[in-house]
Length: 573
Ligand SMILES: Nc1ncnc2c1ncn2[C@@H]1O[C@H](COP(=O)(O)OP(=O)(O)OP(=O)(O)O)[C@@H](O)[C@H]1O
Image 1: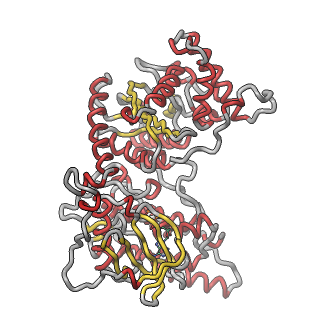
Image 2 (image 1 turned 30 degrees about the vertical axis):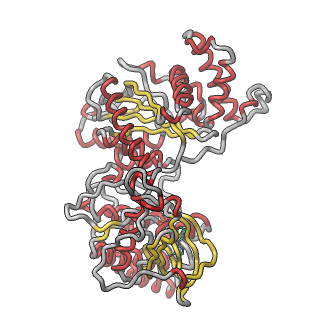
Image 3 (image 1 turned 90 degrees about the vertical axis):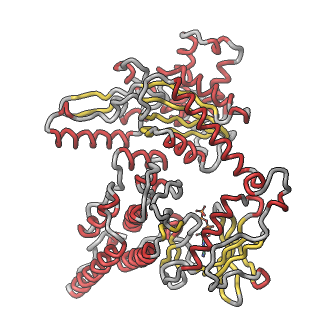
């Protein structure tokens, strides 16, 4: 989880006059003062401890400014809980520390529309006026944080659809009408923590309705989830189920952090337990083991979760060498690695990055593929602010859909299709890359492991439901939108908020009005909620090719008539 850049030093509380203070700082101070006043009024034990006010200020400053802006001051006791959880989580034995409580999120029926009570988008403007929804509370107190205005807007929209469909305002089903709980976790911040916590919640059948993730300046996390799906209002049983699930989760983390225990027998040394080579299924016909002496390493290109990637040569050919870091190798990684080799060696297509070979004798574990000199489409769009003009955009889309069609014909689901995994060679041919997480589809067709990135992920994958190759079609739809707009999908939301929106509120990126209707229709078909409604890649290739022809002809006509080209939207680029 990224740490927000807006954390201020803890010594600045009284240092600036109120006029000179930045707006965020002023609001934070106001929230701090209000929370402190309430805690003292309620006579909480902590409030009487010496130096409590300084510690509370320190708490606000450990966290990003948006924590203070979003927190419900009427729930001052939650701030104490957060402070306590963060402190508790300092002891590794307590990680992750968590707290559960029942919450009530009351929708307001306002005329013919259904409004979520905490959807006031002015809440970001005035922290003090944000928190009036608890006045309408039911048996339980409201959540600690207001929900994202974007998601609320969507909830509102979804409810309006209900109203129109049902023909009556009161037949609308408020999104937040079921028993809900707020679960707050604190632990040491680390990559993929959010996805671990969300899987943990999904595993016990909870649906995340809201998520607020914060990182402290000193490396801890505070993640607050509002969930439904737990049928009882009381919290004790939920707490004990969570405890059990957390201890399972700890066991798994332990085996990941201790590869010896995972791979070998107890008490064996690392060298003894480490396999001398990895068993990769083979039909005996392919020669793919590479002698490292024939590999020449040049510069490091980048790093991924597997290890580092180098440019180099193999028998005079320019290659990309993905090196697994031996110190980070464990059983799961080795399985992924062998799987990657197994998949890559079988495939050969001009729109799929070509596998050349692998070194599988530890400590030399690496995968050698063709080198893609023009980098990723993601970097092109978002780092270099590149734009695809009409012909190139269609060409990229056709390249990717052909590569994906080939993979699907070979029963390979990519599962992590996104622009970062689309690489360009020197001729600007785009190829599908990164099978670090690709898998041969199991016979049952059930694949539940969570991979990929939320912004591109199909709802069924986010929800840990069984999924198939149509999950890649959804991701392709998001990729097409990205190529069209040059923007990051749901850029105003955190990845987790995007995930909640996609699953719960059918959130999708907004298609620009100027988009060619047939292209817009293709995007919408690709990201249908129901996977069976999404077209197969064989159809997508055909649709895109026809569109390219049509647009090419239109362009020719316009050129002849002296007009300029804006048939899709890339004319604007
Ligand atoms: N065949 C290749 N040729 C040139 N550059 C490549 C090639 N494969 C990957 N890269 C680049 O190397 C960097 C690291 O890629 P890698 O696949 O190891 O990790 P990643 O995809 O960034 O992350 P992760 O594996 O965690 O999803 C990225 O910038 C990627 O664009």
